[in-house]
Length: 151
Image (cartoon, rainbow, N blue to C red):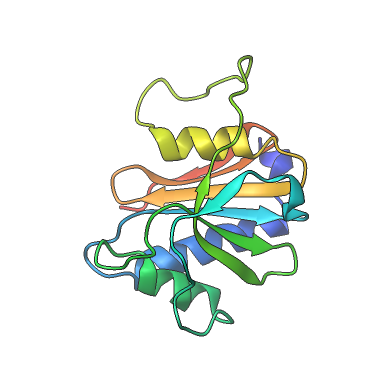
């Protein structure tokens, strides 16, 4: 697992921790996909438009919408491999991988499985999720490569 952790993984972790630390008390959790090519990734927008804000500061933008009060808190958010936030609030529906090895015995839900399965899609570099109760996890090639408790 440690051999799969590189600078890209650590940068995504730091962004996600920054989002968590900058978020409101009602942090809704977050799902992020870091991608190389979005054309093969099964997504569908959950909102008709993007929020009117500056997408250049990924951490602040995502922290500001990661509240149950925001219309854009739901779904996954997408960052290109050149670290540009390109899509927010997307329904992310990766195919189920029947023979995937599930590391966790308990403490996961739909967002976890979407990130785990989604990390196997061609064009996806990493998937990350974070929530108050679960913590933070990053996935690569169908494996949870990093987990940190956020408490």
